[in-house]
Amino acid sequence: MWRKSATALGVIALLTVGSSGGHTARAGGESSGPITMWTVYDTADRMATMEPVLEDFTAETGIEVDLVGVSAPDLPQAMVTSAAAGDLPDVVVHGVELTAGWVAEGILDPAAATEVIEELDPETFSESALRLIEVADGGWGTVPSDGWGQMIFYRTDLYEEAGLEPPTTYETVLTAAEALHGDGVSGFALGNAAGNGFTQQVFEHFALANDCHLVDDDGNVTLDSPNCVEAIQFYIDLNEFAPAGSGDVDTTRAGYLAGQVAAMSWSPHLLDELAGLFPDTPPSCAECGDDPAWLAERTAMVPLVVGPSGDEPTQYGITINVGITTSADTSLAQELVRYLVSDGYMGFLSISPEGRYPMRSGAEPDGTEYADGWAELAVGSGNNTATTAELYGPETLDTIAQAATQFDSWGIAQGSGALVTALRGDLELTRILREALDGNVTAEEAAQQMQANVEQVQSELE
Image 1 (cartoon, rainbow, N blue to C red):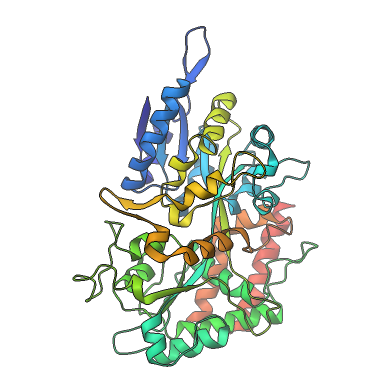
Image 2 (cartoon, rainbow, N blue to C red):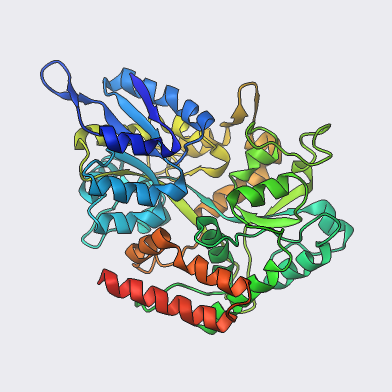
């Protein structure tokens, strides 16, 4: 049977009592679990959505699964702690930025993941998703499930009333933020909290737009480049029109849903909340009480942005992957991972589908049944559901699909994934950025400090 062990920081208790030991046996002595799966989809409703998926898996295979929810910001440290205790989960749902580092640290088992991908046929997976998780000696470090690309959400009513262009460039973003800031509305909500993953996410979104990269193709750190200085200065200027207080994933979303923000950089996971289908964080604007769709009807998305030194419009994004750890009951973990990206795929993706475009379009290289099925998945909970297409139209589906398959990300494609993992663990770059936002250092000084920090981390990994 499926068993829900814990959510969020309940992982600490599992580290105390043991989360992946104690495999029982089937008739004939074959192990049947339980195996442990950690997931970043850790809210109560998302954990509950996963329940029938794992129940079906257990009914089909006889393998029991203990599900543990760990929030994405807590996952890197939780995995390090678990590895030190010799008590890793069997399977972990994680972002691509953690893959290379975990492979280098001996947390993920590339041979087990590669075997699954080869059995399912690599040609059924997104080529770009596989490229991000390649390991040095061949094969892949984890198994791709889905992905999303960062977008700018903006209030079309406010922009149109002020005669402003959509926020597709540094100039139009900053011009609109300044023009719309005031009268109870902030011009742009952005991540500005130090030591915060959302700050890293939003800054990287804008940095990539200006052709500011972490490293070049030879692995040389390039954060002190003129393009990066320009990106940092843009972020400093844009922060002048941000809401008061600390900007993180929760406060930026709350401000937009309250109708107090003109634009922000966020993931497509906002779409269900924007439509009033996520009960924990409903739209709270003054007009939303009588019309829950009021805000959604006045919001548009820009998937691509370009800076003055950018070669072409780009966007930041990540893939979500299902990894098998080095301490897993390998055959059982592989069976679960295969199920999650095949027979159980639609159930797995039904957890927040608006932000989870499948990295397998079908079971065969030319198949489309998974992509087609994703488009029909219901967003919301209980009787309050609708598909993304019903809510926002087919153009939004195309935008999500394009964003999930054509994004960029610092360092991974250049072979510096282990460096990216290390940087996401300490988030020192966001602390340096915060110093620049506070006026304690200039954009040039911040870029130099970022350069020195990353070079130091890079040297420690060699």
